[in-house]
Image 1 (cartoon, one colour):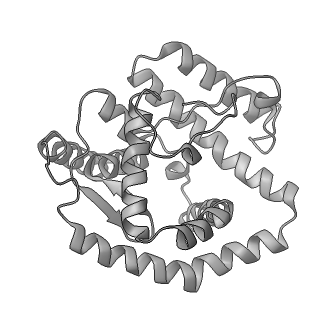
Image 2 (tube, rainbow, N blue to C red; image 1 turned 90 degrees about the horizontal axis):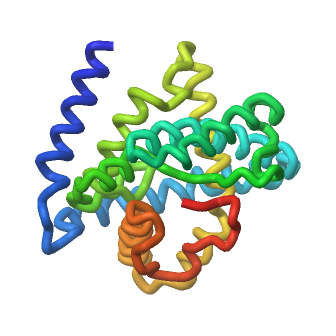
Length: 242
């Protein structure tokens, strides 16, 4: 517990020191990032994309939906915590209610009962919370196996993993790693159409992904008030709001 606390303090201090700085170039680490992006792209096409494709082909749609709903429900808990930290108490109450409904009536979140009852779905993370309180992005980063991020968002991800991520409290390492692996495959399977479109449409997929990520995050921190880079990144589903 002490080591986790020290790590958390370290990454928060790193964000406060680097994330608040204004960078004329939001990608000062581009040479390194492009190398990591290439590594991720090769790894994905060789390993993760085929696994995700097999998962989608073998698993019936109801099972895939249940798995996706289960992990989305866990994220709802994280969202509620971050909404409280951002003083969005009304939305936090809705997210908490959504989590309770899906965790009980929805059988541990396997069924999204809350959406059928009209309860909105929000998505907040600690990176957004830091942005809400004025912490800047810092440098753009591409993380091995994870993908686009920033100094601020990486800090938020690490902080969440040590504090409010429900999966981090699973004591058995094998079970915890299996859950993380299943979540990764489920999310990758959901992104199969988008990844194919990116490869076909973008002259420079790295730059396209970087700019889209930074604009999307700015839009999320601003609660949708930032100008969207591309309408394809917006949703018209009223149950899946920021």
